[in-house]
Image (cartoon, rainbow, N blue to C red; front, side, top):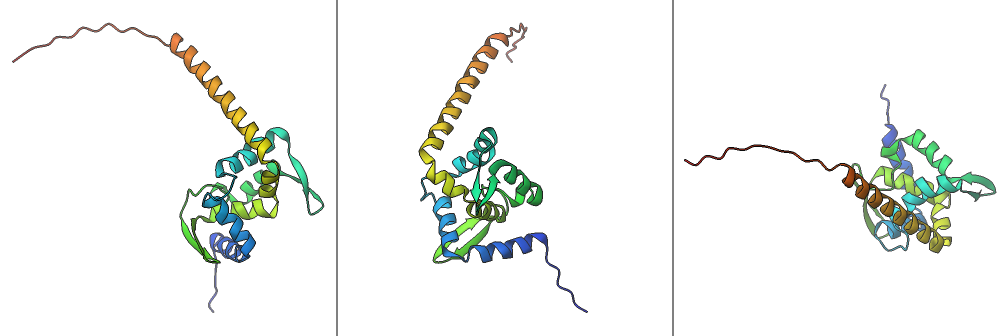
Length: 170
């Protein structure tokens, strides 16, 4: 008797390949990953990991409340960071669909399937100006805070060392 066993990764990859057979889904992925979108990967990551946590962001998806950050954390528990990552940080695969070729990872494809299905990308596009301004202000505050810490630590961490040295010439 011959049994066919598929790994969790291959099952996930097969379901992702089926999902991205849909041209609209594939176009959404290609647009962002090939920098043809207003929205950057950095902004998407910031929105999901920081903004949604601080703002307790929740909106309706198909008539049901969707809490972005808590759902994201649930997805991470279910898949792990390797299989749910907006950045291309693991084993890469080449995805060819609808005349587009894209180098990506299973984790990146899975993240974007989740983001598309739950209208995260739509939310970001709809609120882009406000989100961009907020992200820039937050980054500016962090930079200023970092500079203040660095400046004050430099004053406190000054040290003087006396050494003696003997130089000989042959």
